[in-house]
Amino acid sequence: MNAFSSRAFSLQTRAFYPWLFALFPAAFLYSHNIGETPARSLWLPLVLSLGLALLVWLAARAAAPQGGKASLITLLFCIMFFTYGHIGLGLKFPSWMVFPWAAVFLLVSGLVLSARRDFSGWASGLNTFAAFLIISVGAQIAWARTHSSGNTPRLTQLYQDARLSAAKPDLENFPDVYYLIVDRYANGKVLKEEFGFDNREFLDFLWAKGFYVADESRCNYPQTHMSLASSLNMDYIDRARGERSVGPSFIYRILKDSRVLRLFKSLGYTFIQLGSWFEGTAFNPYADLNLEGSGVLRFSNDFFFKFIRTTALCPLTVARLYGPRQRLRILQQLDELERMPSRKSPKFVFAHLLITHMPYVFGPNGEESDVRDPEKSFTYIDQVRYANTRLSRLIDILISGSSHPPIIVLQSDEGPKPGRPAVLVKGKRRKPTRSARTETEAQNRVHHPILNAMAFPGVDTKVLYPSISPVNTFRVLFNLYFRARYALLPDRTCDPSKNADFGDLIESDE
Image: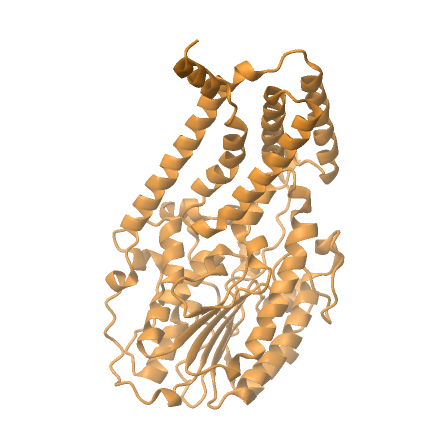
């Protein structure tokens, strides 16, 4: 055998397929969430996947010097580790099922180690198949990136705003603007009728501080990404899109590169964002400052947890990772907001607070929940009680610490999602999905009403009314303070499940 053919044979038998199979699950998941997931969220799942595969390969190589066996065991690990979440969620595995799953892996690995053959001859075929998978998903990602960038131009092309006719006055006289989204905070009537909790004390506090509380307000969309995209663009999504298709990339693009953001920046405002783990608000490339928290978001962003839920680590998602980091992030956000008056004005501050969003990680006085089962440790009303305490303190600090009375909008993107009753499917009782498609009218009466309170100091707020919805919030604000001439839109809640354009935008958790 000559030198050339010897090298060719070596390439055919050298097993690089374990590393390609390790990369594939994260890349595949990213390709199906590319519209709402920034590329920076992909590196951690890739590093985690390669790291785990390398550890398994080293352990197998130590047990069997033959490289073919170590590679095959690593492939087996990738298959079982990265499919567990898909199979487990589909079959409703209890958390302890991960142990027999691991036992099967160890048993089959033992059979591979004890076999007389080396399995090196399998490398060529497995290399080819793994390369095909990676090339396919890479081409899908490249196409999606090219397609999305071509269909979601910057908002200067979507909105030709010439409605702020006032000449810019001295920036020192501009009020700071705080847009505080308290995710899933319920309307006062819903709290009383559905949860048996009278929220009058907090609502009276808001009135006393100069807020107008729109006690009949409802969300414009019952999903976070669509709700915020609508309010931050002062329009309904179907109107904003024009002739363009409504896809995840469009929604997330106009959520980040929004009409409201552009208007404030055109007036000389600094835009500061305090995001959550939710990819739509985790990081905004158009913000002047992203306050992401210390040691939180990289390990608790939306895509990372979607990825973890597909693996054998899914039993740890809420109890060990998701809940504690959500608690830490919320506390960091509130602390940052309390320090905000000391930052240079004028500023537009947007904060997405998950303090009343599952998992429930606070007691009524801020107590820490049991990480083993955070959803059972405290209730939704416990979150509301603690939120009221911290928000009351925050509002006092923002008002007393500002040189000019600030504009504060305290709003929820949607109400709490009520539990779904079991349904009969082929004669068997099953829990339906948590999609907006399955909500009944009774559930909508809980999910659609929202908290909506606005402090607009120094101006006549007679234009406000009890049923005003988020799509009109900034229309009113710009009219009152910056001589804009925006007409108010009809207040309505759009049901995306009944609109074919929005069918693929309905999410289960947000």
